[in-house]
Image (cartoon, rainbow, N blue to C red; front, side):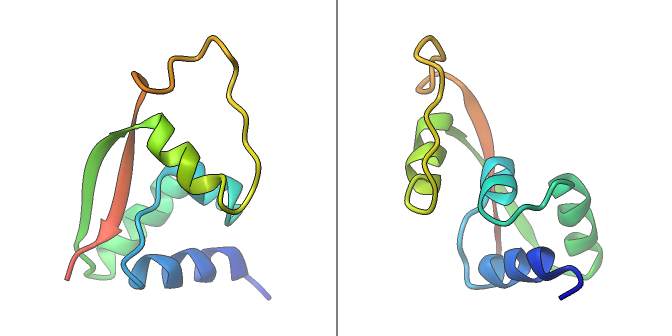
Length: 87
């Protein structure tokens, strides 16, 4: 299926799930998440963002695949951006 990973990510977000770049790459295999968000907004969707700690994203991603960050990475202090579709 052409662009199946992009379709799956879009469907996931339309079901009001939060996604970060890490989710997009590790779960859906979408490498150009920034472009995805750009085109999603161009289609008229309202995309909200929030800065969250990396540990929050890692807990979410680890429900689907195992990711173990380096021991010396301060995952509670590292900030990433979550994206979701507004209502």
